Amino acid sequence: MTAWIGTVFESDVGWNHLEGLVDIGNRMAGSEGEREAAELTRDALADAGARNARFDPFEIQGWTRGDSAIVTGDTAQDCIALPRSPDDRVVAPLIDLGYGLPADFEETDVEDAIVMVRSDVPDYYDRYLHRREKYHHAVENGAVGFVYRNHVEGCLPPTGSVGWRDEPIGPIPAVGVSSEVGARLGRRFDGESVTLSVEAEIDPAESRNVRAELGPDTDQRVLVTSHVDAHDIAEGAMDNGAGTAMVVELANALAEREDELETRVEFVAFGAEEVGLVGSTRYAEEADPEAIKAVVNSDGVVRDRTLSIITHGFDALQDVANDVAERYEHPIGTVPKVGPHSDHWPFVERGIPGCHVKSISDGPGRGWGHTYADTIEKLEPRTLCEQAILLTEYAVALAREDVTVDHREREEIAADLEAQDLAEGMRITGDWPYDE
Image (cartoon, rainbow, N blue to C red; front, side, top):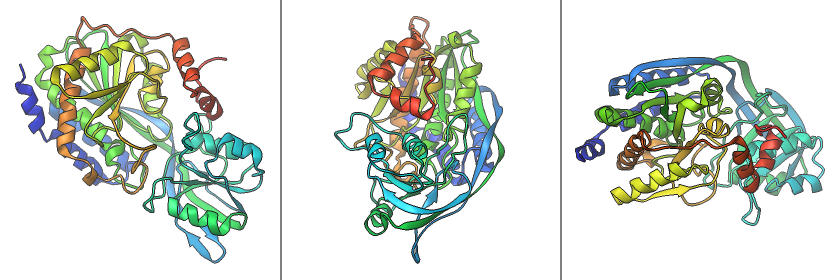
């Protein structure tokens, strides 16, 4: 009954797929690299034994990086454009607004200025402020440019998209700078006139979801998901090559245990996650909610040894994880809170049971994620295999007919967002999905 554990632990299927993904290079949504990664993933799922491996293509707003610059006097500071920044050039005073809290914008006149804000929030602040929320405050208060300063040391400028669902290209140019460059800008040029420029090609593009399945042809299905795209500045090993490698590894393991599956398991590697959860939103909008028993979304796995599963108030998702951890005497952290980021969210916001599978880690933010440093040598094959063992059993358990995962009312999800002080930021960025 447990021979499969050794097989998974010795498997190199997922790790080989991870190597293939990072060796592609640029997997930006809508790029040729994203298409190549999707093809690689489709073929890997088929090779693992999943049936009907296929594409589900869709149109997106394409964005291709050109040069970007911050020129201060006779010096140029290292920076990178934030995806979906407009192609633009502005000259204006730089204002270092620190953390960029809402009160900072209320207390400081930033009209016709270039605003710089940090990527974190202070320990005393009661909620996390997403990059796009800070960008929104800059726009609404009349800023003409936006500089996003990493709080992680190491000369690592951060990336991450701006803009909104209905207006994917933002209205003012935006760049990321490292913690060190941000400190230099604040120390030497706060209040001084600087030039910020972004060059980008903005054209229609195509992305795609990759889909395949195992198990009986039941009306309901368990979705095992990840996203195949990544930001173009790095390999995207952690975000989210490892998640897609996990999906492939789970398909390989579950193919050997297909007779144990009592509900169909569908594997989905979504496209265009990094530019607004486009692929998963498309899937969720077109799906019958009652046909989805649960969504197990890997985004942030393998970074550290211990799994963390955010269960969004779906008690059965937490209970099954705790049962797996107890039976295998291996820790799995469970977090019952809601988290409106990554590809589980378009399902969870509709009351569909979904969890976000990641790794427990210390410190705020993404660490090396969304920077040049998101590279494969920071991950370990052993961690991938250990987590795959637990997630294989998790998927088998969720697929059992005697395991019921109740859907939640949309009003309950909305109330949780309010209680966790997440609703305000979602309203500001236009991501609030509920009628007022």
